[in-house]
Image 1 (tube, helix red, strand yellow):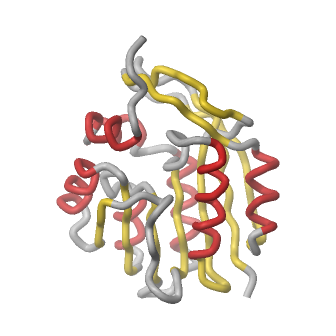
Image 2 (cartoon, rainbow, N blue to C red):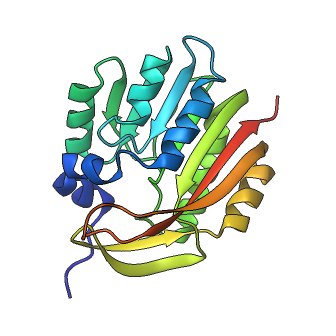
Length: 209
């Protein structure tokens, strides 16, 4: 059996290939349009798991936001800096990242939590909720399910994934002071033989003042 790879190793290897396959997920584009319409010019936004910078950071920079992206993959950070020079990107892990004082007007989390253990997923949700300033927005997407330590092959790589159920995501966000304004699931079918259909959960939430 192949050795299970860390998220950094997987995304260092995928590089721009990830954007080619997952750069135009309809639910993510809709979520970004929804968020951008609600943020004032200069809003401070954190993009967790920023990847190549597209579509999230690029969309929000165009909307006039002050965007910071973090990603565990050095290769992704390099690509993002080249693709979206109007944002700041740093190599950092959501599990250990220290935000600036005051947090952010919005935090985006599109699929960065899957290649970790289930308790780490829960803790990362708590951390991101705490980084969202009062009245700010938290927008996320993931592959939902009560999953812990599942070994799979994804995009040609052996990885171990975990997640929480839809109900657990919603309850955890509510318990951490966020009102879930909208959520839905949708099936995404990548146009690539190395990635099968995925059920995606999208949540739009706002932190209570």
